[in-house]
Image 1 (cartoon, rainbow, N blue to C red):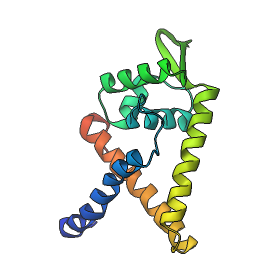
Image 2 (image 1 turned 45 degrees about the vertical axis):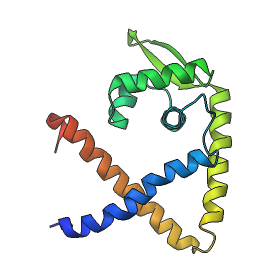
Image 3 (image 1 turned 180 degrees about the horizontal axis):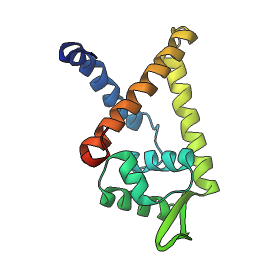
Image 4 (image 1 turned 135 degrees about the horizontal axis):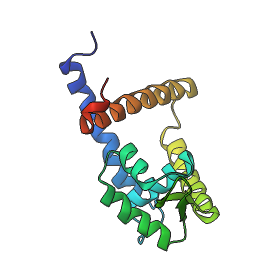
Length: 157
């Protein structure tokens, strides 16, 4: 049957708190630079973890308009953190990939974030944290699929 709207309503509160932590990350310097917005850093992370892909694929996966990704790609390119090359299958389209500098910057940023999380969650049991990670990963995947299906109903199950 699935969860009731009432229990999902209870979930909204901690989700809002987690989303609000983005501001904490910005205030604590857990981002790249003032010239590179938080969202562009997230896009770089996605490119590093997904590998080379088209901007349209990133927009679809992030459930945002292509123009949003285009602006972020431009900033990342200017910063030397990503590069593009023509797609051999369709030379009208570019494939994007992180540069070695982009990968190094992301590794450094993620290390700072992991250290902050480690300190903030120092009283947690590691098994509990693994369970939470698994649950959040599963929930994020389901929520992302639902958002994509809402934007593209023909792809809905």
